[in-house]
Amino acid sequence: MYFLSEWYGCLSLFDVCILQIFARESGLQMSELINELLQIMTSMGYWGIMIGLMIEVIPSEIVLAYGGLLVYRGDVTFAEAVIFGTIGGTIAQIFVYWIGRYGGRPFLEKYGKFLLINKKHIDVAEAWFNRYGTGVIFTARFIPVVRHAISIPAGIAKMPLSRFALYTTLAVIPWSILFVFLGVKLGELGKSFEQIGDIAGPYVQPFIWISVILTLLYIIYKIVRKRQSGANSELSGNVGAAFSPKPGTTEDKAPGTAQGKAQDKTRDTAQGTTQKMVRDIPQGTVLINGLGEEYLVFNSQSITGGSSTQVVDQLVIGPNGIFHLLTKDWSEEIRLTPKGARLGTVDRYEDVTGPLYRNEYVLKKQLRSNRLEADVVGLLWCVNPDCRLEGKLPAFAAVKAEQILDFIRGYKPKKRLSSDQIGQIVRVIEEGHGAS
Image (cartoon, rainbow, N blue to C red; front, top):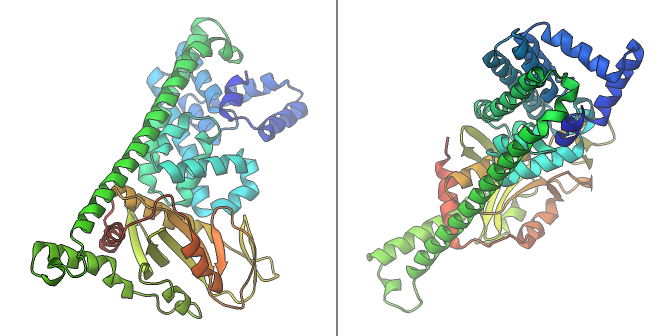
């Protein structure tokens, strides 16, 4: 009866141990205990199906299949089982979303085992979310390992709850229909829910293949869109180069011409904005200013992606990407851990990964909605020269005051940006364009 749980990572070792403890204390076999729990849940009809999926003590596939048996017996209708199963499954994922949003990665790495989520699941889910965007909230629901953990990076990034709930609901609906249907089949064949593995294969395998194909199509779509964005940026860059003046030519001395106007616009955007340097940052301002004219630096910059808005301490845009900085004026020893930054020798932690994740999510969302492509790099920057950093963060770099120049200049991007591409990105960020 555990083949579905093992396949989709729904029943962890911790989960099995808890059930075994309850079974031993109650004198029941494991299957008898699960049967008892299912009977308690389903004795409440469709409300029991919803509650069973919300708390998910038993994997959702088993609860839904048992709901299908209730449909076969006439206790509930097929529509009621699917609707309340969908509501319960969606609410369960909203709980995980809230944990990611308000608890962050440090909380989950410490207590995730009690929620049946381990660090590996979080790492994979974050990689998918950061690489392919919010669409994976739907597609990843059908993929082993990440299907439950994908709600975590969505919460950490403060993805709009309405959009998260919509994508999750759309994914839970076919899942609920499939396993309620399988439960009805169990009843028609006169089998118990323990025998669901005997009939599920012919139905589940095509469903899995369809899910994999849809996921691959989504990934291909994202790759093609990125390439088109790169091609558009390259074409724009070539056009800008065509209007760039050559020393000693007539175009360089004709500001009234169309070429001269285009040239002036590019200069104003990609170079003139360079003077917007950071201010009000103790000790470290001169270091940022030393980056050079090819880098544009913004202080306390508001960025908008979709319906989310973040304020970035420092935003640096240059040929090798976009760097969003979380700036701290710590003057003590800081130990960086998965739980956050431990300040001094006391057991006091500050969450630094949460703001960086949210900034990165909004920046990438803004770029994607405007068909732009650039490396986006999050960085914790301690500007006080007395700051002492030890350890490292799970997903972001951390540097001291004197290291910032070398880090930004030495970063190797996937593709360098032209001055015209930098100008486009600056315009988008300053004007706050982002798809809703």
